[in-house]
Image (cartoon, rainbow, N blue to C red):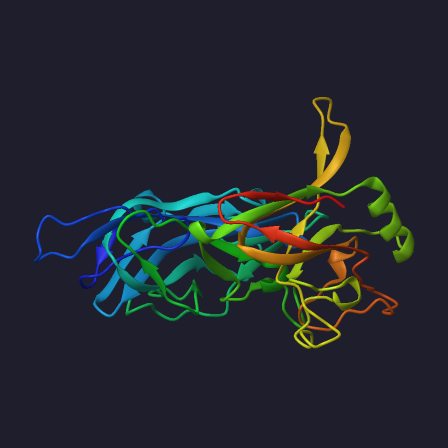
Length: 333
């Protein structure tokens, strides 16, 4: 891994492990880190990001980490890393403890090519993928015109001892299909969040055939994309709405994130059930909602059950879901 130092600082993003100490009072206390990525999926067959580098900065300066040997691109299909699955971008690097901000850089390309970031749809259509931010991170990154920047709004702490983080992409809110005169997909630069694994747990469960059939009957359609939505504590079924920006009122509460419902197959390839997983959820209380119409949830507009062409609604709810750090909560529909 190629590390470029621009001052006296640190590193990281994603799945972060730190342990360390210092042999001298004159030197900064060190920690080690690794970076990984995970995903809450969007309604696409594959979402592949061509990662270039990770940059971490603080008041002292910044470090740049290539994510592949010889500075090559690292291609990661985020839909292969749902729930608690993680793909490591950076590992085993030593950095000083302290407060940091982080940027992740990817290769942008509006053209449909597998040699850059791209999206594949369910009908096997191939589209370019870009993020519309390309600024530097502490003076590092974005040297090339085809470089896109993903960044975190909040700083985070790398402390002495073990630090474990994961950078999770929320594609259900941050990924946009082609709009207007664009023939490529767009990833919002803030559609990735950093979680401290000491503060998070996971939610897993299954969705019964009866629940799925009930939603499909209510939808009265022929195309379905099942998903489970995560809502704040005490959100009732009547309050659960889509990802639209107009939500979060007394009668309409937007989800925090969503997870795709996947088929469970046996050794013969027969479907024997359906399950879902939220891999990185901050400890606390939540509600869950099930829909079969996730494909109609456009975060840029309000999607309603009365929409004739693309209706959206939550059909079933589970409330009083408690998540404990470093543990798995099971809740079935």
